[in-house]
Amino acid sequence: MSDIIRRDPHAEWIARNRLHPLHAAMQPVQHSWMGPNGIIRKNPHGIGFIGPNGIKRIDRSGAQQGGAAKRSATVEVQLPLHQVAQPAFYISVVPDMVGGRLSSHDRDLLGLAHQLAGNDGAVLAVVFGEHKENAFATAGVDRLLVLEGDEFSGYAPEQRVQGLRSVDNQFSPRHWLLPDSRSGGGELGRRFAAALGERPATRVWQVKGEECIGRAGAGLQDLARPVARLILAAAECAEPVSETRHEALPVELSTAAARSLSRIEDLGAVAVDPAAIPMAEAEFIFSGGNGVKDWPLFHKTAMALGATEGASRVAVDDGFMARDRQVGASGTWVTARVYVAVGISGAIQHLQGIGACDKVVAINLDPGCDMIKRADLSVIGESAEILQALIAAVEAYRNEAKRDAA
Image 1 (tube, one colour):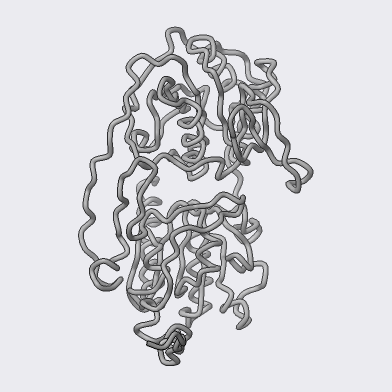
Image 2 (image 1 turned 135 degrees about the horizontal axis):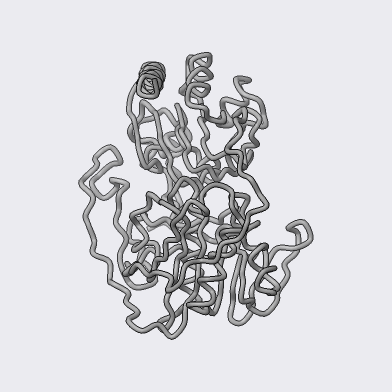
């Protein structure tokens, strides 16, 4: 047999032609990629992916059934239960809980806490006020402490520091972990460090052995130092917990948190024009691509939803959106809590740019495109009809809210 490698021009043409029905089948499956902070991320939906504890991940892409369009029911897997009956020590985590739920940054932080706790320690999550999260167990929380009270609601960093000091007096955690974010964790962590007299490790992106490594020099250099008691960690500081489920046992403070007269008055949230929010900081992004045919309707829908507008590279190159609205590896890496992709097929550069988004909603005509595979919720249909129905639903909801208020 000849050793000459033969090319298949027809297969190469299909791989280049995104409109060909077999285009998706010709693309290589991406099992891992590098995140914006240099951490290698793994695809939990990849075929044959084995986790660190030897558990095979579930394939939800539909590829094992002969195509992405053939979706089967998700197989429920009972994860092994991680129990710590008598913790030797605690690792305390104070998540941001934006919107009352764990963000991807919070889950990375819990993954780092689980790494520091090992088998003898327990991860203690401290949450302020009411929340909507019901997945603390699968996120790696062994003990859950909810500090309730009106004094912790809104912007109340002084009262929250008092609450954390009470937790520190009762549980004496070996380490405190807070997200170094703009959502409140960065400021609260620095205030808490000053109250404890600790020197915090900030912008930490890796804990290795007895050292923690953080960003310095405007993010261009790494600063290594011994592992501090109080760590303010960046996004992607560790892999989130995904191979085990935890007890998330509720605990309480033995004594009420001390109260002090606050010097800060919270006047409530201030309305901000979504178009003025930088893409990298936006929490709700409404993004359009080549499949959008009615751009005035697209802009109207984004305004009705109060979302920040984004776009794919194709839409930007065609002149429908400004260059600073481009999302992707060649544009802006975004970390939105909700990302809605309208008419975007999902090029690899675009998928890399939205890798840190919590929830992705895809509106597309092609049920086999890569964006549909990535999305948490998909709507298959003509974008114009779906956007009109979405505007009508938003207006009906707001009218009903006004009637109830009246």
